[in-house]
Image 1 (cartoon, rainbow, N blue to C red):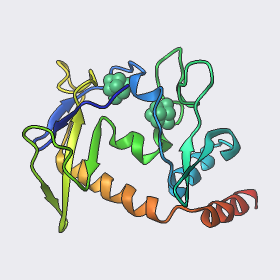
Image 2: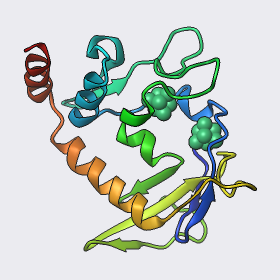
Image 3: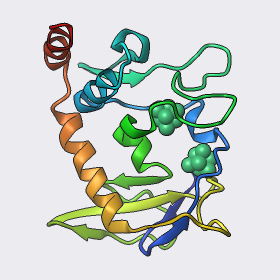
Image 4: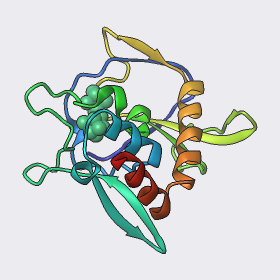
Length: 171
Ligand code: SF4
Ligand code: SF4
């Protein structure tokens, strides 16, 4: 699924339709906090963490199953996430996106939050956005907060921290 960005500056109504699109064929980065939270929910990191070399960095990425590139935590029968209460912060942000730079989309404007300048977007291709019978309303402030949290955690995520976390989980 390709993210079709639309500027996000006002609250939008939302209801996930469990269409699976955002849980298949995606590259979901994991932070150490994500890995720890999911492991504490009873899942072995060996079953859900994969590695990606990017420049001189190793990134931790959520594993996908081979037959449809769906996330290993997606239940194909119900369309739901098996780790919903512990899912990665990137999944909590989606169908929104937080960027440090403008993407060049018509109507975009910077969003200022806690002294930071951000550009926020939502994915126009997600059928849950502006749903007719919404379950909730999502505000730019809450997405900006999650985006900054992800940025902080992602900066601290490295192989040494991962090894330390595995040691702690084994104790
Ligand atoms: S967030 Fe959107 S794309 Fe993802 S499953 Fe829900 S409705 Fe589908
Ligand atoms: S962890 Fe859950 S929400 Fe995130 S991609 Fe996997 S199934 Fe989807």
